[in-house]
Amino acid sequence: MKLGTLAACLSLALGASAFAQTTTLKIGYATTKESHYGVGSTVFCDEVEKGTQGRYKCQHFPNSALGGEREQIEAIQLGTQDLVNTSTGPVGNFVPEVKIVDIPFLFRDYDHARKVMDGPIGQDILAKFPSKGIIALGWTENGFRHMTNSKRDIVKPSDAAGLKMRTMENKVHMDGYRTFGILPTPMAFPELFGALQQGTVDGQENPIPVILSSKFSQVQNHLSLTAHVYSPALLLLSPKVWNKLSDADKKVFLEAAKKAGAAQRKKVNEDENNGIAQLEKDGMKVTRKVDGDAFRAALKPAYAGYAKEFGADNIKKISDVQ
Ligand code: EAX
Image 1 (cartoon, rainbow, N blue to C red):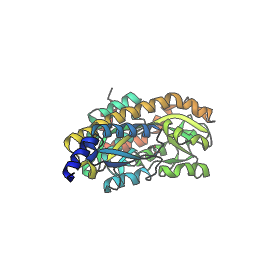
Image 2: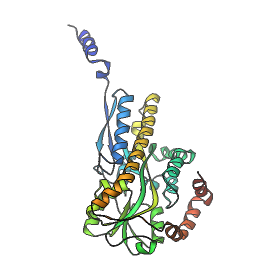
Image 3: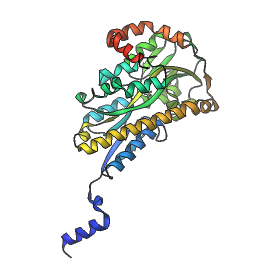
Image 4: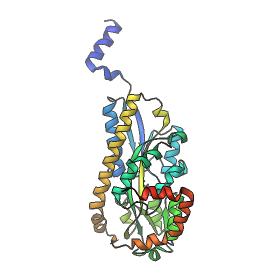
């Protein structure tokens, strides 16, 4: 049999797609494959694989296997990593326009936050990424952040005062938390469990899905439902990959990111609904009644700084979204 005939027979037998090349994309995130980040990332990758008839698929690197979020974003810029599903924690250091959504007590609730992200304000922010060498495919979600510590219940800022707390590498957060009297200690997430275990810091703050999946109940016994800041997340892609995609494939990636965002939010909802009872079972003392007004009042001086940096009118535009 001639070689050409053989190839024709094979392609008939295997289907033409068997000859199309498969590109495996590396996707990283901070928490487990079962957590909100894992759920969102899995939906994204499944949709991309389906929509490109298997020409693109993913290899998952959960549990910060590719490093902290800042490192992973740098790798996206360099093109040594393809995808990251990351909180906005360190993102403002790359794309300053993101910082405004990290302001504490800016969002009233999940509905408000999601509406802003899905609306023109959130979408305009995504458009700022390409000039910094990053493609933002869409918003996912980390959740409202709550405080945990090993010393005491936190009801009001004076209870938090004096506590050494790990924060993300995020100046907007740190400026705000200082007004609560907290001593902020910025640290990459992969170092956090050990720091809590060794008592290098007294506490930390993260959404319920992170506290749950990272098993912080093993090293922290007080949880206060402070919901002091919304923690958005993003699905970021390396331009090295994006620039090779056809227009049709670009659409597939963007649609997949939308579905990923929806799935990730759904998992955040589930963890908010069921996870707090689980953490209590795991031995955490949960403070549900928090004096939100006292926290907001304490923040006043920080808000003066935010108004200067971001424009009071821009902050108001976000607060005014109904
Ligand atoms: O994105 O660094 C953090 O506290 C983040 O919330 C966590 O890594 C998930």
